[in-house]
Structure formats: structure tokens, C-alpha cells
Length: 98
Image (tube, rainbow, N blue to C red):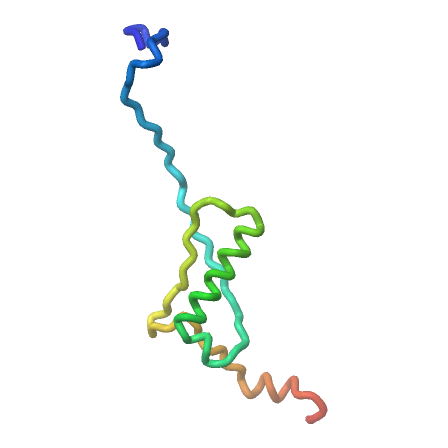
């Protein structure tokens, strides 16, 4: 550059310092999963396998940027919480009995 901020030609064998910088905006997306299964969903190996499947699905849908997928750990230390169905719900919607 010259003093008037114009570009000019230089020899190709001259080396000059430069750097490129791009700042990405971080986006957080929370997805709630409902999984039907036994106690194996509490196994860290199973949880890791599910995360890998989620990453694979994202890639299949064209999301190729650097992404980080993690579990949100609840205050009790678990990733998954058992969903309790009330007995009133079961009684109201049971088949064939009143």
C-alpha cells in the first residue's frame, strides 16, 4: 500500500505478513428428546452413541460447519429424566375398563 491507501504491484518473490480473521456467531439450540428404553440410556457408552447418531443426521442434512453437540446434565447429575405418567392419566385412558 502507498500512503494514499492504493495498491501497487510488487515482485511475486517478496514475502509480506498478513492474516485473515473471521468471527462466527455462536448459536445455541436446545433439542428435547423423548426416548423409550430400558436403563441402558443411562450408560455413558449408549449416550455417546446417540450423540454420534445426532451428529451423523446433522451432516446428512447439510450441516457441515464445526458444531458441538453435548448433553445437558441435570442438577442431579443425570442426562435423562424418567417421565412419570400419573395414575389418573392411565385410569382415564385405559382401554376396555371404566
